[in-house]
Structure formats: structure tokens, C-alpha cells
Amino acid sequence: MTDHIRIEQSDRLITVTFNRPDKRNAITQDMYQAMADAVNAYAADDKSRALMITADGAGDGAYFTAGNDLQDFAMGPRGENNPPVIQFLHAIKDCPKPLIAAVNGPAIGVGLTLTLHCDLVYAAQSATFSAPFVKLGLVPEAASSMLLPEAIGMAAAMDVFMTGRTLTSEEALSMGLVSRVFDDGEFHSQARELAHVVANAAPNAMRHAKALVRDRNAQITDRMAAESVHFANQLQSPEFGESVAAMMAKRPAVYP
Image (tube, rainbow, N blue to C red; front, top):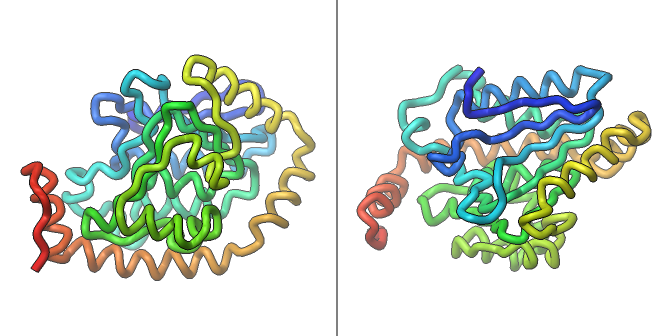
């Protein structure tokens, strides 16, 4: 377990909180492992009825997550055949019970794509959403190449992927990417109140409703596998190396 993920239970609601504010909640492999374990434990626990992923604060520079910690991932994968990030993505994909994302600030990369596997997405007014994979010389992941176009339309999704466009919370709401937007000052209390409503609803009806709406698990699994191949290849590519070098040097990337 890592201190950078905080897990709390209140009645039937489990809250998983990013707790690495000094690094804008960038996600390490240890954090992925902790989240995968939490989601899998929740899925197997009949007494827990809803799980919410969030981070502290709203506004004033608070982040949901800046995405993957590239320095941590540069050290190589842990669990060669089943790395923590894959465990987490499959855990949220396969979870039969309600998952809620309470996005309190910028959600970058996997911060956006994990929300596509959540059943409800609440956003603070100051929240933003971006998926700058191509800008980093990478490709979309977490089946987002399929799920984001379905959520917001092909043209809007390609705009997000190809230009690295950042969506405001209101844009995300109008596109159907989020369920509701709340003022920063009331965000956590409003999100928690609604999460408890979900946690106290009829559990079997919730499971069946989710299964009916999300009845494409095999397709999503296949897309994740295809993305993983391209993602791994791009991680070893000169394009990714140049993208990271340019970002660190605060200069435009130059691709031959």
C-alpha cells in the first residue's frame, strides 16, 4: 500500500482519493496497484455498494491527476506479464458495481480516460479534461480510442486526441462526458451526497442496469489490447523521446 492513495469507507460508500498533491497527483505504479486492489476488493464485497475516485481540494490549483508519472514509468514495468496499470484498467472495466469519478480539477491523460469506465462523472467548475497522448508521441489508452468518440462524437474526440485540446467542465457537460457540474466550494459535499444516494439504492437493480448499459466488455478488452501494443511501441520510439525532451526543455518538439 502507498500513502499516495487514501482509501476510506463511509457506510456503503468507498472513496479512493489521490493523495500526491506535490506532484499534481501524477500516478505511479504503486498507486495503480493500490487502486486495482481497492476496486477488486470493492467488487467482491457485498456490503460496499458504490466506489468514488477523487482528489482533495477544488480550485486554487488542486488537481484530479496530471496523468502517469513518466519518471516512475521510465524505470520499467513492474509485474512483467500483468503490470499494475493493466490490473487497474481491467479492474475498472470489469467492475460490476457502480463506479463514480468526482473530478475536482485538471484530469489529464488517464485522468480523463479512467472516467470513461465510470458510471457517473461529477466535475467541479474548475475541472478540465485533456488527453495529450499524441503531443507526447503516444497513442490513446484505456480503450479511449473507442469510448471517447462514443461519448462526445468522432470529430470532438479527434480534436481532443490530435491537438491536445483541453475541455472545460461546462464543455465536458454539454458533450456528455460528465454527469453534473458543481461550484468548487460545494463540489465535494454535493458529489459525496449523490454517491451516498447511489450506494443506498437497490444493489441488484444497480448491477443489472450497469450490465445492460455496458454490455460490450469483450470489445473493450480487445481495444485495450490493441492500444497497449501501439502504446508500448511508441514508448520505445524516437517520437516519445523527442516529446519528453522538448517538454523538459520547454521548447517545441521537432519530428523528422
